[in-house]
Image 1: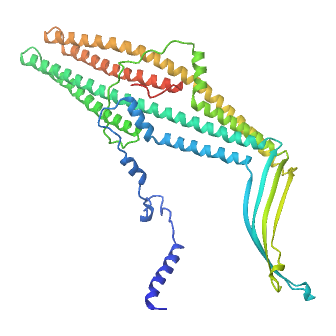
Image 2 (image 1 turned 90 degrees about the vertical axis):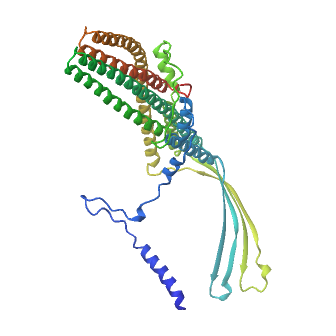
Amino acid sequence: MAPHTLKPLSTALLALAMAGCVQAPPPGSSTEDWIAPKVAHKPDTVWGEVRARKPDLSQPLALPALADIALQNNAATKKAWHDARAASAQVRYAQGYFMPSITAGAGLTRLTTSAHPASFDQNNMTYGPGLQLSYLICNFGGGRSAAVEQALQTVYAANFTFNRAFQDTLLAAQTAYYGVISAQAAVEASETNAVDSKAILDAAISRRDAGLGVDLEVLQAQTGHDQALFTLASAQGQLKIARGILAQTLGLPADTPVSLAPPVAALPAPVSKQDMKTLIDEALARRPDLSALRSTLSAREAAIRVAKASRWPSLYASGSANRNYYELYGLSNRESAMDDWTYTGGLSLKWNLFDGFQTLSATRTAEAQAESMRATLMQAELGASAEIWSRFQAYETALRKYEFSEAALKSAAAARQAAMDSYTSGVKGILDLLNAENQLTEARSRQIAVRQEVFTTLATLAHATGLIEKGKN
């Protein structure tokens, strides 16, 4: 062998030898971190896909547009969709029980026999293709149709689960949207509080300079203004956090800037009064997650029939067609090897009379799993009824709280203005004015929080009753 061919060959042999010596050492100590080898670092193509998403964010987005983006990008919704597609394939798999099984094959046999006397010697070869058909005509226990029903109900469950993931995404989008809207309102309120506190500070300085006040009043006013600036900084930070949560809900990096359009409605309308029994019953029949559990229960009940069907006989039809070619060695005349076709057909009845109690065990397992799912469904329905009740009461309460917060805000604003007038005229002291300012600040914050509560409790009520949709903001 030429010398120039030895080096590539030796390199290849060395690579093969090293491939069998690859190791993945564990951490050397429980007190030190693991030093990952370079081969362990894989490129993150998934994050690259997220960064590559470029939705149209040139205009302020209303809630329906946000919901569309979230539905396009949300990973949970995509997962549920692929799960539903995978379950659908199982139905086609089960439907294969109603179709014949056709197998193509080929065979080759060489036979050599040495015998005494030599007239019994054999030396020949047989070969040729063939087709075999097997068809389950019926299982007398209904197992074939039960298997299809089990797969079909599994598909229904997966599809209902996708619908619920769809509704979960809408709820997340609405919650994140109103979170940003409320955070923006909190920043605006904090800015107003800072302006008001600065006016109090200026008034205290003016009174002191005019000889009507003291340094203590200025310091107290300065403390109030500093507190207002502290609250403003906190509100601005919360707004940034809320924007990051919104971007995550939309399936975008947290640093993606998203401009929002304000809500169309100043406040949602009250839910029409109706019998709670009717509301709960209709919601339980409508909610996709409960429908998914019902379909799963039906699949478990079909699994019982599948297991019991093994106790009964099955009738099969079978057939085959084979082309046979012969090679007979030692004969002077090749035509003496008669090539031929062979055909078979028939019916067979198979009845497994004893299988070591496997059928009995499978039946008992399926029955226990069905009862377990029935209990799960009952627990979920009871939980859903309690959720609907509490969500309805929370929304009703939020509406009443908002009415009171509006009245309290008007009263606090009037009281603050009166305190300011009294302070500048020398009738009231700085503590009265600061107290009125604090009450106004609390009233503004409370109204913003309650307003968000109204929108979010309505969204969660719609989600609990299975009625949530993109709609209008």
